[in-house]
Amino acid sequence: MKNKHLHFATRTIHAGYDPHQNHGALTPPIHTSSTFAFNTVEQGGDAFAGENDHYIYSRLGTPSQQQLEQRLADLEGSEAALVTASGMGAITSAIWSLVQAGDEIIADKSLYGCTFSFFEHGLKKFGVTVNYMDLSKPQFLTEHITKRTKLVYTESPSNPNMRLVDIAAVADITRQHGIKFMVDNTFCTPYLQNPISLGAHIVVHSATKYLGGHGDLIAGVVAGSAEDLLHIRQFGLKDMTGAVISGHDVALLMRGLKTLHVRMDRHCENAQKVAEYLNESPYIKQVDYPGLNGFSQAELAKKQMRQPGGMLAFELQGDRAQAAAFVNQLQLILCAVSLGDTESLIQHPASMTHSTYTEEELIAHLISPTLLRLSVGLEHIDDIIADIDQALESVFNGGSGNKELSVFA
Ligand code: 7XF
Image (cartoon, rainbow, N blue to C red; front, side, top):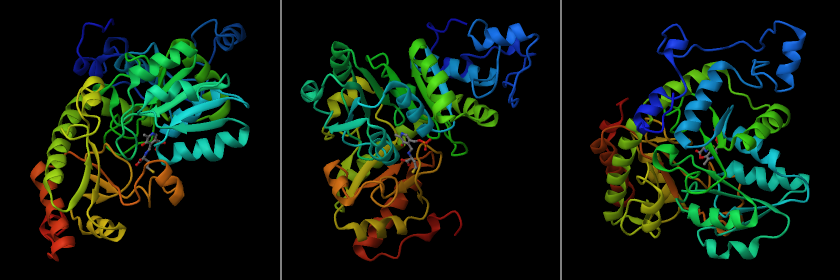
């Protein structure tokens, strides 16, 4: 099926899977087989040599995995895609394939905690140096590039503080220098942003988040050129990480994707309202949300994101103890890591997702120790705001809170 003329909403439901090739089944079959039988030794040998497309062993792919990968490549606008057992499986499989001892990576200052930990405590042990810079100022990138630089890496928006990087500007510079540029597109999903169409070489995702959408799976995605993806699959995934997704998670992810556009529209709508509410509150010091007019990178957000997303970061007036008291007082919004689920989830990065950073590293990497991160869910907006309101009143005015907002009350 050629999909170029079809809208995103249609492709997220149909791309990569033809029911008529599968007994008319609308839902793709789940392939759980670990191995695939050959008719002859010669056929098996040719499969291993890459001279036919017979399935071999599920660490190298299955029919259902391939359908999902075609759908994801279609949505990201890439030649190829690879699904993995986790977002970290995607990031590590891709990066192990692209670098070797002596190479350098330039990464943006703010990164998800385990990505930072992989760079600091993983790659560095094997002789790969990671240098951090503020990639929101791409005009300074060139001066950080050396002849050893192999890769530039960023999230946009970044986890947890919602800083954006001008993807097209960084892509231009990396192309001039023959360096790969990898973007973690988890917060946006391909519905809101397509880094490859902006010039990036490789996109990674934690599919655990919005792509799956229901908090019931762990998975990751790598998207990029067919050549890069073949290398990442056959070397990074097959030999280095073995981070292979299970057939059951392929099916859950395929199901989640079918409603991605509908969920994202509502996540964005709800997040915009929550951000505006927080922005008006006397108890809030700062709100970082790309949809606010006062957002420091509002113009860039409009340039590269179709909508501002479902994630926001904010700081209360007050100290870390008050921030914790606020979270503890929430009734409906759950205190949990992860994001992009139907439930609204709030967490304190310095204690949780970014606890891999020391106190000094948090400051150096622009992550305030009092920052809270909210993944705005799909509950009714009035209930979400009422919950925030009662928790703020309780912390700042000694209110008794509103237990009626708890579904367990
Ligand atoms: O291996 P995972 O599927 O959990 O994905 C890793 C990952 C990669 N990139 C970004 C931007 C991520 O946010 C994540 C996972 N982040 C969760 C969070 O920030 O809440 C993990 C919970 S500790």
